[in-house]
Image 1 (cartoon, rainbow, N blue to C red):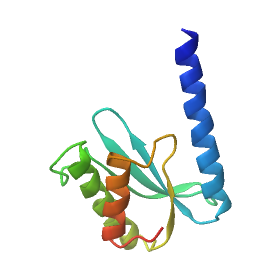
Image 2 (cartoon, rainbow, N blue to C red):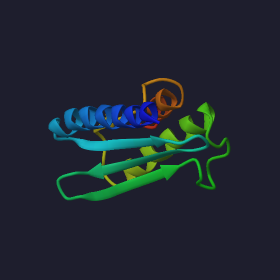
Image 3 (cartoon, rainbow, N blue to C red):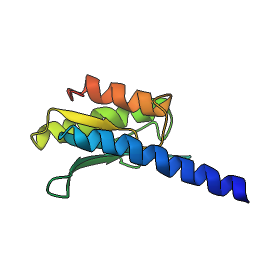
Length: 117
């Protein structure tokens, strides 16, 4: 039981460290969350506490679901919605997740869609 608690605390610690560096940059934040089945992305303005754009693998326009192809589609979709909201430059907040697999695919899709990190 103590091992699971430690893993959870480690994940929280990693997420806080990443988020602190991203917030220190002063840019808008592209925050992602990856669950077992889906991937979610938000563009957040921390200064005003508002969410400017959202996208997820649950959207009807995303065909592939929560795999790498779906994550890349979500990246392109969030980039499209962010550009529509007037956002071009963001800081990538990967949270507790390693920059690998679906997280990397989402970032590459967002770059391909026109966002700059």
